[in-house]
Length: 280
Image (tube, rainbow, N blue to C red):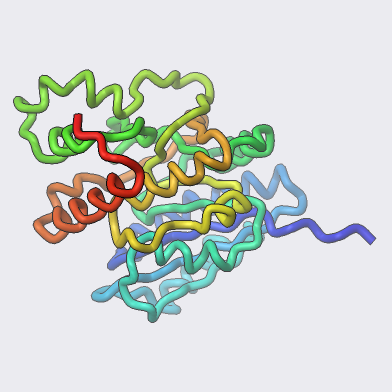
């Protein structure tokens, strides 16, 4: 008797006081992509974990019931994980990663919308490139402006300029910032060898994700994706796949208040202390 195929795709979405409207928009785009995958893979099945870190607007079973309707035709199961409090972004994703037994795993933010064939393009690439443990998509924000998820190794000076300097003071750093954001990558074909991938959308070979132990839970928020990228890079070459396209509404940690600036600084110190200081 032929052994059953392993589960295909798992997805973890960490929510923190996320609106149901925003989550429904993501789920609608996910459902469309999962249907496209199901059409190309007869043994397709998927599992989505909503990991709720909320302290003010926790998700409810009723919210999830409406989300399950979005996924009814996609051979996709939906599970809500909550009651653990706000344990941090990486630790929350690990609750799902540690349960996953699939071939592929997608780390996803709730403020993302997937364009058509995003998952099909990414999974097809991972199937054809077993040496690639993780891929990043092309991204635009809600106004259509391109974002750059792939990064070269950062410096402290660049982070200060990028996050806290006014526009006129950033001008001398323009070329260095563009180099850091890998703006020279081609948009008509995939590229391998990305040092760092930002964490709003990280499509992974699940086995590689297990090999590195998932996220380092010492990072509560910020830099956990940089740290994971560097560790995943030991498992193979990370890639940028522009045929995968998403919209992302997040960013701007410096504009979120003093508490976020403190978390950013604390996580930045841990990152550089772990992986090596670069000041300029």
